[in-house]
Length: 282
Length: 100
Image 1 (cartoon, rainbow over the protein chains, first blue to last red):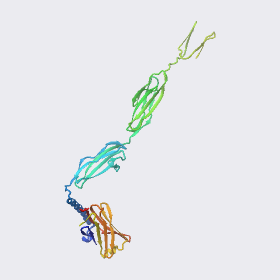
Image 2: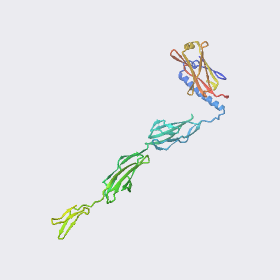
Image 3: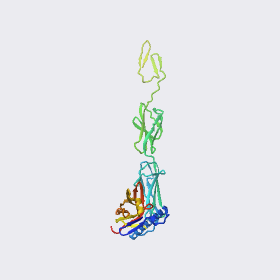
Image 4: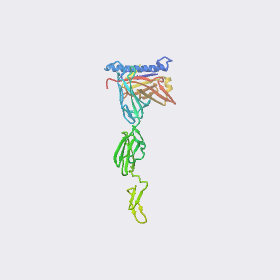
């Protein structure tokens, strides 16, 4: 077998390798010859480029000039992490490849120069520069992806005890709420519709002395800067003070006079006198 | 030695077989040939002359890339696939000419 290749300006005859080489040549040897031919072809191409005017430059292994970076370095799930590619030097200009892992597992959610993929976890991006000279140069940057942001959700309602009374003191149990970042609580106590006391976390509420039943509210608000705050309002009535009724009335009678003591002022009395005695009604 | 041709020139090659080699191939069921180059493949036009036992190949190289390439011929006959050459590919180098 003979294979003839006709070029535009020359003719080259290429014999099939088994015909040209002595018998017994292994396929491995033929493969090695093919590799050498490839290397030779690359060298010829290089020579041709130089003959075409390209300035010859010695090969210089890649080196890192400016490291790559990820911004921000920490962010919740859903954050767009911008990647800044490192700068490598070398001759010829290195070819840079990029790979990424999340908690050690490969990820491919990098679009352009941004990562918007899954989380949470530790995002590590590695750039590798090669140019056929020396060892590859690398640059690595990392960022922490935290759990997704979440608005506050009340999981345990606040409570007050003991029940508010005029001039009394109650303890406010703030309850609990979840969210990311963790929400904090503030509260405001209103007496008859007017703000009276405020605080953060739990605490004591001192109730005013009131002469008439008075409405009160205590509103506990959880907030973390994400979404709407979560609020829970407790309501009730402060019962006004009432005098203790006397244990019993005392009647003191005598000639021409009748005295009643320890009698509450509130009841209206109807007193009827007569020879048969005295009747007192309320 | 690797053949070299200029990009844009018509690629022409022929495979010359002796009587025994030809008898193992002809008549075939199908014959194709491709040039493989940097992951791309270019179809080669194939024609044959049984009298002279020659398989002729031809292609327009205008769209080919600069650099190394290789080709072979693939023949199907009676359920068998026969590669020519059987143990290697024929290499050639594509380079840019001065004229466009």
